Amino acid sequence: MKQRVLTGVIAGAGFLSLIIIGGWPFAVLMFAIATIGTAELLKMKHIPILSAKGFIGIVFMWILLVPDNFALLDWIPLHRTELFLLLIVLLLGLTVLSKNKFSFDDAGFTVLTSVYVGFGFHYFMFARFVEDGLLLIFLILILVWATDSGAYFAGRKFGKHKLAPSISPKKTVEGSAGGVMLALAIGSLYTLFFPFFDTWALSLAFMIVVSLTGQVGDLIESAFKRHYAVKDSGNVLPGHGGILDRFDSLIFVMPVVFLLGFF
Image (cartoon, rainbow, N blue to C red; front, side, top):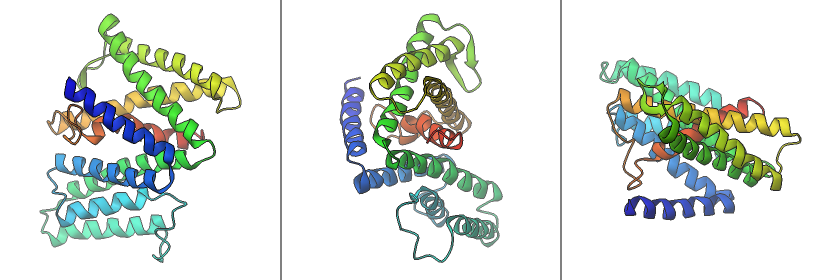
């Protein structure tokens, strides 16, 4: 427990500091975290990060991760989407060149991993760089953390009906509801001091979406780990597991709130 608390305090302080600083320091942190997260998923599939197929997976993710306002791909005469499609073609060709040691299933896993992690952290950066992005990021973090805490305590106190027993046996419907309620309570208090949306109805809709999709993101990561029979996605954070264990909710929330037009 002492190690868990110490890791949480140090990592949390550093993470929040770089979010506040923004700019290149924040972008570099996102690239590092996303790269580790991708490596964790590839490892579940027994794809070594220090291999041609592991490197391709990382490159896929980087292409999707690069913020739109960072001119890192200007020297390549292809649009981001065209480059991504080109790499998919090359990845499928690798299944032939490797004589199916790198299978179609491996190729599909690599592509989906890059989309899941790459777009998740891409829109996390996107949200930070919009107007009042710092207020938005903190609101999302508060909602996700409040949901986790509310679900944990409500589940322990009132939990009776299993939410997704085949994926995460300890999660309950009552815990899920408690998570949403605490997120709404703390999120409402936050928006009283830092109003981000024009109307209360829009703020309420945003808080509900973030809380619910955050829980779905957590279940997605649990499904990965159960399918590949691993307890944690990694061990980069002593006492907390891997990067994806800490960011599973966030990287699912961010694309969803973008697609729904909240940014």
